[in-house]
Length: 169
Image 1 (tube, helix red, strand yellow):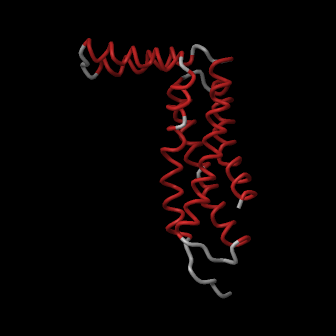
Image 2: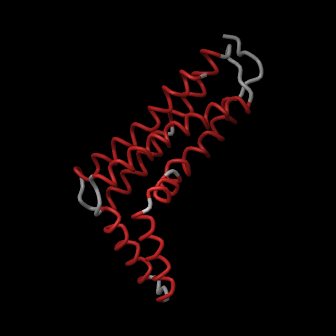
């Protein structure tokens, strides 16, 4: 299981990592970069399905329970998400210091447009300020980005791929 989890976990993490590293080179517009980032996270989650299927077919004699499939899928998710967070922390704190300032301005503009009160604006400002400077809070919130997509994909893939008896060809 370790080989499948590491192989497909690295693939699941590498695509979004590559995209958020090169996205600023492709487009200076933060909104375009965010769309590109989310798109790559969604597309890379296909490796969870493929990884569970690979494990079922190559290491488990063509059968797999829902629980075992979910365990494989969640471990692939964990490897990919940890890769994403580690690279993000390195890139953000060493190379992209102003990225969160730009994101903060975009979020504050959204709040103003919705008619948020000064108290809500201050609360949001305090949150984003702590996020910008606290690597632990930054990592905790950053891991939610890929896992908000990949955990449901792991669950759905496990439901689709579970097989109690070997399928005869």
